[in-house]
Image (tube, rainbow, N blue to C red; front, side, top):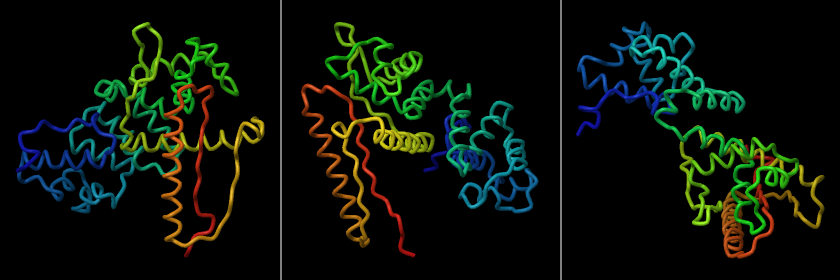
Length: 281
């Protein structure tokens, strides 16, 4: 059965991967017109290689600025669709994290994208701003006060009141927190899908921010309040995987201890790092 038959033309604003969009768009036109082929598209777009579109879809070729224009014209994209396609290509093809974050922000600021995904901006903020998760955990403490000034003062260095207000709004929108029967804020168990490329990139950014916070704690937090240590060891591939599994088990044990703590007083961050310094050739 052809999953593309009788379907509407793919909407680019539903995608965060331009290659998948091109794949679906090609299949759509192929079903509308049997003569539509990779060769036909190449002639229509002005490419010398008859399989250029196929190579791009498979990730074997990238698009240049000029190629983006040719693709937009050949597929008859509107101005707003072309602008979004341009952002999408740059986001997917960016090699540096700084560039990727820039284009991710452009992606989520798009009106067309926000119309279809109204909560994506809140999700972006959740992963892009390291303090969202600690604020959510802070709400579980008995001493919690729903006062942006008080919340801001709990962090070192302090957050701004505007940062706290925005975080609380987004956390409620994402149903990460909710109001109970008495009107007070409380946590709500709600997972956010993080499989797409936008969020996986932001999660890397979040990990980097928290690792830096760990480094800063050496100077900012007394030794009695923290545990920072390191070890450098030679290891075989088999033992490397065994240790990785042990670390994952240990993390689950720590989570179980925290979940059974009925009277939490502080919010802690635990970073576990296990990476090669010298790799086998």
